[in-house]
Length: 632
Image 1 (cartoon, one colour):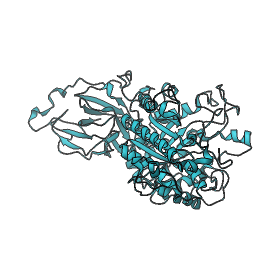
Image 2 (cartoon, rainbow, N blue to C red):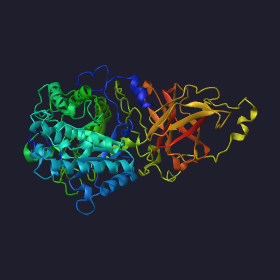
Image 3 (cartoon, rainbow, N blue to C red):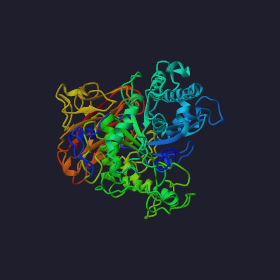
């Protein structure tokens, strides 16, 4: 659908690691500035590289794939608000998509593609539609309805605003963001303070999010690679990139990238590497849309390096991270025929192989280092390659198997602002971060992404570390009058022993006498009411190779904790190897001490870079968990 090229013009664990290591793996790209990648990572992305797919509402392939995908996107076109005439104009269809997506374990992503469907023409009439007050009133009433439904839903929602619209508006206004548009003039009360300009149209999304109070919504502004008037990705290959970036930034800064009257800015930028499989264009139009995958390719060539440099310059100029969306699914084993559902049908491309092939680790890091926070795969039109029949040369589904292996191993932690990830060294930097659904850990052998409430379906994966019914260690508690019998490596009897908290969900840790598994004190881990992820960890734990580390963990009753993962992160000598064991909350006993373990590899290095616990919560909740008696 969207994403045309100008050939036609109308077509704290790993955060700490990233803070210390600023090496890059950018091949032929210019060296990154000493400040590294710019801008915060919105909390919905959980500080890890998300991988998502397009899927229609009501379908369940993603759920049934047993892959812990992060996100699920769907187009919202004109008519979504009343289910295209099959329901009331109340946005119930959107609410259903949100809840269905969350129940399957994914973050819902809305590709809001309504403007081109409004009365008055198509893409070439984009500006004319913005000048029509009645069109804008109806249009923004639907935007408001979407945001109201998202607020009621409560969980993270990513709204990708109008693919290609900004590019068309830049053309149609001759790059003048102050061109008239009927925004305040629409008569919508919430928009009365906005300028009647094209920039005001983009600001209206920010203003409505604020007025509705939909703080759980991440807003992404689509940036087409041809918006400057030169198609930097496919045709204008020798043109310097910075001037083209500057042209677009000058147009969009007053539209919500820079400080403005709404008091907020867009959270991310969204780009589309290509809207069809590359060989579809070659066979049907004679156009070369294949990118050179070589890490030494010149940035003046049709290559991933050139596109990555364009992304990097945008990131450095705007301070915004990137979502790459509607990435073609084709691989080199496709048959180059229209896809009607048969094995290997569809057209060839290399955009799955680039990110999940033999050099996928290096390429994912490369793009994370230029600001990419998510990879969203999906066909932009019928007949293209699909993840449902994209068999590789081994006869197995290409994207499902390769991306599945990456996600089930924990994925890739994103670099913190001002840093870059280290070069690859045999694995991702985190290889165990729990997926956003907090219920599909790599250790459960394929538990479906059910939001983390799996009722104990891990089927014994815990290997004997099930809850011990709240035993009190046979008298090793506080009965010895101030001389605690606590032989633990970390018993927290006098202080926190170097342990600290990180992540939005947690406040600072402390020692406490409220609960104790051994001795008289434990480490209190306070949850501050913010939904999301948090970690408690210590540096330089001297755990011998191959040992099993046992943590005693008090799970409070009534909490919104959906899972906990003991983990170990080794340092550079072990290529930053991550080892973790995920425990769904259904396998633990609330109101009691639970024993949870992580077994280090036989050749693990010592001391560890970090030893700790990672928590995932599913909703706002304030309370305290406790950790004690860490032994090996």
